[in-house]
Length: 146
Image 1 (cartoon, rainbow, N blue to C red):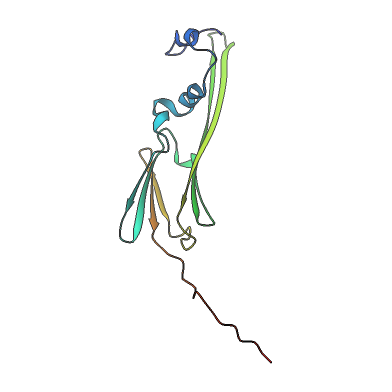
Image 2: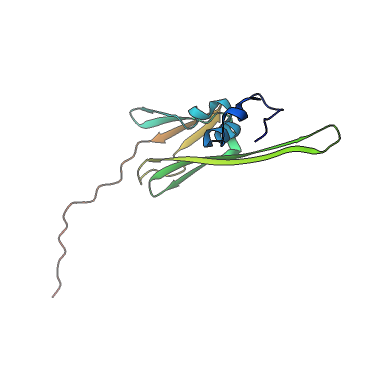
């Protein structure tokens, strides 16, 4: 394996073989890779505040889905690195793609219209209402005709 002349870690390739998953994650998510998708949840009287760290992502790379009571936060991105010399010859081409997701059970009574989401400064901020599904009576008697 040849050293990367055009990167910050010139000698690192000589000391590390083969490349690890952490190397690819660093390429995708930058120096914040160990902190991606860290989540803080605060409980309030009528709702939960959920803050999810997504540094290096853009709003259009994040997707929220609500299905069967589970709120799923997905983030994906790709990185293309093409370098050429002064004559336009390709020296290196690298492509990385990655995706991650987390799911939270919010209950079947919560609808997607009730969840508020905003993304600012690398943090996805969610406001999820507290709702409980209506309780059904434990026992019902069914009358038999005839």
